Length: 250
Ligand code: PGA
Image (cartoon, rainbow, N blue to C red; front, side, top):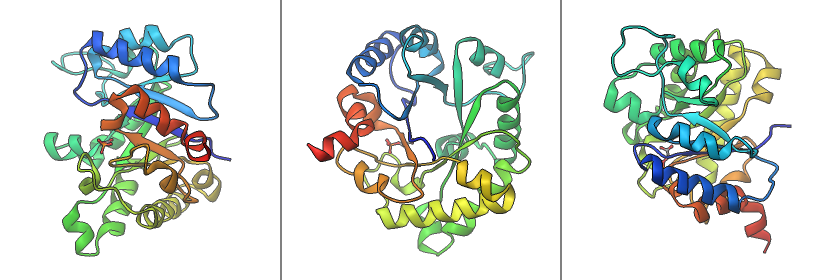
C-alpha cells in the first residue's frame, strides 16, 4: 500500500516570518492524518519552519539544491546544509527550474543521486507543455524525462506529474488525463527498476490542485497524492486538500 502524500510547494513566496505563521496555521489545523505531509518553503524559511514542524508529523523539504556537498559554488545550497536543518525531501526538476533556469534531466539525476546519498528523498517532477500534449507527444516526453532523471537510482524516490499547462493556471488535468499519465509513468518505472519498485513508488499529481478538485483526482488508481503550489499558501485550503476524505463525506 502506498501512503498518500501531500506536499506544499511555497515557491518564492513568504518571508521567514510569514512562513512561520503559515506553518503554525497548518500544523494547528491538521488532525493526525493517514498521509505524509511535507512543507516546502523557500530556503530562507526552512529553519523557522523546521522549528515549528519538528515536534509534529509534518516533514520538511526544499525546492531545489546543488549536487555538490560544498565549496566555491556561489549562491548554491548543498544537501548537507538541507539535511542539517531537518529536510527529508527535495523537489527536483520542477518545470519552473527546467524552463526558467535551464535545468536538464541529467542535472536532475545528478542532484537526485546526491540527495539520496545524504538521506534526502527526491521528489522528481516531470510534465509536458501544452504544445507537446496537443501534438500527441505527452507520454513520450514524460517517459524520456522519467528515464533521464531517474535511471540508476537505488533508493526510494517520489515522482510528481505536473502538466506545465496546469501549473498556476487554474486549468487542472481531468482525472482521466492524470490517470493515463500516472499509469504510464508506473509502467516506465517498472521497466527502469522492477514491478515491485514501480508498485511502491508514489506518484503525485500537481497543477492547480484545489479543495474542490482534489477528491476526483485522488480517486484515480495511480494517483498517490498531490504537489500543491498556490493553494498551499493558505492554511485552510491546504488542510482541506489533505483532509479531502473528511470534507467530501461531510
Ligand atoms: P499550482 O502549482 O498548484 O499553483 O498549480 C503546482 C506546482 O507548481 O507544484
